[in-house]
Every structure is written in C-alpha cells, then in structure tokens.
Length: 376
Image (cartoon, rainbow, N blue to C red; front, side):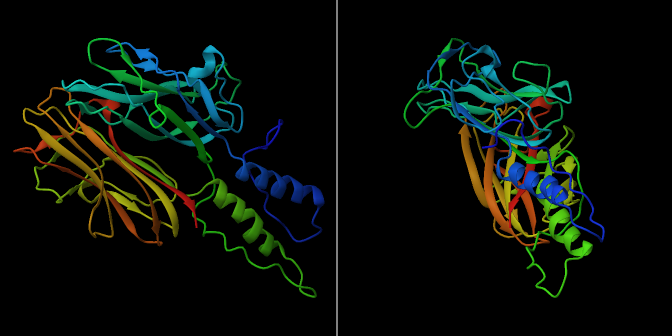
C-alpha cells in the first residue's frame, strides 16, 4: 500500500510535440500507477456478537480491520463506526448483517448506509428482510455512494456508516460464528468527474527506432489510458415512488423493474421506464447489483430478483418467502457479468401473491440498480 503523502486522483496532461520531460512522466505515470494499484479500500467486520436494541437504526462499529489501504477507519476508538473519505470519488459499498435469531415469529430486519456526502447527510437502506420459522436473517445492502469532502478520521469530511435494524421488540445479538459475521466493504471505483466516452485501453506497442514517439501516441496510450481507468463506466438508477406495480406471476416469469431516475451514468448507457436497463458502452466485466422492496402484503409472498442480458433467460438471485406483513419485503441480486459493447442488462423482479403489489414508497427503502465496469 502507499505511504503518506498518498497519490492524487489522476488528472493526466495533454501531450504536445517536443521534449518529453522525466518530471512529466513521473507526475502522470508514477502517480497513476500508484493510485490505481492502491486505490482506497476498506473492509471490516464485527466479531463481538454484541446486542442491538429493537427499533433503532444503530451504527455498527467494526472492531476488526481486514484492510484499510488509506487509513480512513480507526477501529480502536469511537470513530470506528464510520469510514472517512480520503480521496474524492464514487465508492462501491457493500454490507451484510447476520443476526442470532432463531425464533419462529416473523420479524423485520434490514441494513442501511448513512453519513455525509458533499457535506450533506444521507441515508439509504438495503433489502427489507422478513424472517421467522427458525431461519437466521442476514439482510444485505449495496450502493454507489459519492464522497467529495476529504478529511481526517473523526473530522468534518464525508463519511460512510453501516447501520443495523431489527424490530423483534427486545435487544438481539449479532451473529458471531466462524462463518457468520457482520461485515462491510467500501471501495473507490471512479472519480467524481472525468473524460467520457473513451475506448478500453489497448496497451499498444511502443514505436521501435528509427520510428519516434509522437504526442498523439502519448495522448492515446498514456493520457487516455489513465483517464479511462480513473473514470470508467458507472451507472446507478432508482425507482421514485409512483403508480407502477409488480404483477403477480408464476416463477420463473419476471418483469423488468421500471426505474425512473438516473443518479449517475457517466457513459450514457442507461434507460428508464418499462424498458429500463443499462447498455454496456464498452466491453468488459461489470459488477451489477439490483435491489427491490415492495409495499405491504395481506397475503404470504415469495419474491425473487434477477438479471436479464439482451432479453434472454433471466438469471435469478435472491429468493425470499414471507408471511402477510405490514412492512413490505424485498430481495437482491449481485453478479459479475462479462459484457460486449452494446449488450443490455435489465433488472427483473418476480412475486407470487394473488395480485399486483406496489413498490415500497418510502424514499430510504428505494428500489435501485447499479453497474460498475471493473476490468476488460
């Protein structure tokens, strides 16, 4: 990992014909390699099995740091509940909170991310999980979160906190076994601004004398390579509560989730409405995640989340069964997909009650879909 002072988020120069200065190569290439090979990454977990009060959206302090490449978290103090922004950018955040719950009564469990983005407070939840009948709950959350204000641990900069929520009516312990521990990962994936659209870097061979290096070669193979890797395709969209419903269907039939609002789409691959989805602007491996939450149901319900590529067979992920409820329920899917330029991924949902169900109208319980280019 890099040592302080840490490298800057790359911002390469545009080359012109003339002498190539060592200082310019060092500033652009060395800084970019150091940053991109050691981008901010944090992973933490809780091993104590401590109890969380019922009905409280409680911040979860990670007492074990698995990795913290830019020292944005401090587990041994009260600051250990949050990860503080050390480099501006979009962060891919994932968390899972398993609970030690084996009672037959169905109860509500979910997670959330909160903190500051751009100096303003934010909060967003993961899947609403209804669990009973002796099955330990383990709700998941994943999101793309922008961080722009850097600062020291415990300072006034942007930060991200994982929270856990349970509504059993009494304190409940977090799971703490060798295979079940609450954890969170926070990973820098993209700059806040950059140059688009660019091709995936081709890693062309350097000219062999007597041929010579031109500014065009440097711009294509140094400048644009750094620009692409610093600002790769990312996408996030969500459904704003309205009149759309998810029809009742017999699994494995599914319906495209009608996303209405695009939050970030730097390579302009997203679409909204009944044909909502993301068309890959360049080829590569994409991390894709979809989450939907539904409104309450007077009937028992089974829900499933899936991804569909180019209108083909839906690949299903999370599948949840719940009894009648007043809170709503949901589920998630996460996949890495190898896509060609022009391939379209759509987030699909299925539910099997006697009638259509509305999507959850609470803003924090939003239904969303995201995609992040990771490699060629």
